[in-house]
Each structure stands twice: as structure tokens, then as C-alpha cells.
Length: 372
Image (spheres, helix red, strand yellow):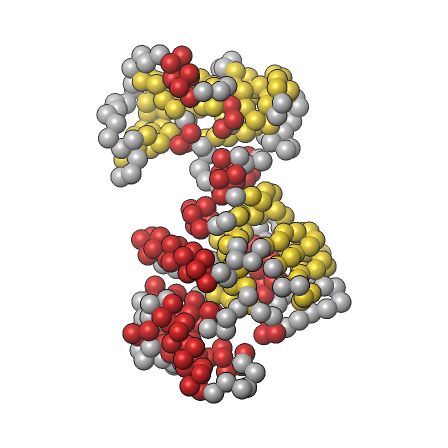
């Protein structure tokens, strides 16, 4: 449905040309929910704006539904592309009612054959999709943030796009409403079968909504895969950090090829850690080991590490620790353990009884650790 090949977008600066997007390639199938995830300045919004036709590309090609809409020699204007976009600011017209806001794109996107009644009917249909048809006559300034977001979404859907582009659409909402809208947007786009590109720096949004995720940094895609692959099988420490919270330990490679795809690292305390090698892992020298807090298993009060190791299965690393800081977050305990090699955070059941200073053994599967 969408095909982006070797997309490059450069901007002039005092230091010369800067690549905001540096040779990005990906494709999206019909009906797929695809997310560009990364920190501010990584190139994700520029990529989206190139697809939308709001930026002229420097090189590469963009195809939408089999038609080349951007290349070094061709540029199709945004209003002639089969797309619709929802911006971070929503861009709701304050002098219009809800209905007129949603009808507005039809006045310049239609072929001129549709009359006012047809445009109104289509606008009401779009408002029903986002459950705002009862507010059609309300003036736009008298809407809540969540309602404005729904109006912006209805205004995008009313043109019946083949590709929907969403640029950080939930960043202005409070946490509870943001979570509700994640589900609503995903359910709606799935039900309508609309191909969607979603741009965000929020890993929770990306993981919960996407069919596939492209993790970006420095204008490039570091990894492209399913939410599960991105979170549990990051190809590098950089991807792991972008996609969620991580623990970081530092050590020196002892054996760069103990088995297929694994390396063995000696920590400063002398503890040996076996872990997966990233695509850019060093064969020798100092490295960082990263792993997720929720993938740390804990054996307390003299519980046999061997039994815990057998229960975890596979190649398992162990490290002695003491309970440090304990934070109750409601759905889990965030526990910071003190070790000879630095602090390690784990997420444990919220009803677990813990006391500071208690001894513990931490267990982490080799497959859950990445060395870089």
C-alpha cells in the first residue's frame, strides 16, 4: 500500500547540509497500523511529512497505492495524495461548529459533484464513528481536549483516505484519556481497514497500538519488527533504551563467541554474565549489558537459586543483591537492588512483603540480555 525506498531529506544549516532522514526504507500493507518510534529529533515527523507531501524529499521514492508521489523528479501535492493527517495541535477551526470543522475538507477535496447535503451526511457519518454526532452543532472552542482530538480524527476520516497519518495525536491529553484514546484509535482504524502511520516518542503507545514498529534514531531505522520483537529481542542497547526502561551493567568481553549469537562478559566484581550479542557488539573490550526490569527474576530469603534457575529455564545469569529503594506504583513494586556492580531494578508483585536490606539472588536469562 505504501512503499518508501531510500528516503533522504536534508536541510541547510550553518555547518552545511544535515540529513534529518538518512536513507530510510519501509513498506506498509493495506490495513496495517505502523508506528515510527523514537526520541525528539530522530527524523520520524520529517519522514511523516515527506509521506504527506508537506516536505519535498532530497532523494529516494515514495509510492502510495502503486503511484509514485515523490521522487527526485516528481512531486504530487499533499491535497492530491490519498492521505489524511491528524496533527499534534489538532488544528481545530475555532470559528466553526463541530460539524463545519469536519465538513471543511470536503469543500476542497471533492470533485465538485457532491452537494452540501451529501457533504453534511458524510460529516455526520464520520462524527458517529468517533461518537461525537450529538455535538455536531457545538462551537469548537467549547470542547474538551479529548473531544477536540476526536473532531480532528473525524475530519481526517471524512475524506475516506487510503492512508491515515497521525503525528503525536495524544501528547496533549492527560494519562487516563490518552490510554482510552489509544484503544479507540486502534479499534477504529482496524474496523475501517485503514492503513495508518503513527508517530510517537511514547513506547507504551507504540507497543500497545502497533502491528509493526520502526525504531528511529539519527534519521535512520535501527530496527523494524513487531512490538514483541522490538521489546523482547532488541538488536542493540540503543533500541532497548528507546523502547522502554532498562538496567545497564558494564563489563569486559571474555569470550565473544561462547555459542551461536551469545557472548560472555565479566563484570567489575568478577561475576560472569552470558548474553545475546547485538548486531554491533564488540568481539573484545568493554561493553554495556542491558535488560528489562520486568524480566528480572528474584529469589528471596535463602530460596535456592538452583531451583529458581531451573524454573526460569535456559542459560541463566545470577547475581547477589540486597533490597534498596522500594516504590509502590499500584500495579507493581518497583524495587531497586544494590549489587557490587551497581543498582538493578526489578518489577515485582504489588502485594509482596519486602524490607530494605533483605538479601536476594537476581536471575536474568541470557536471551533477555543484550551486549553492545
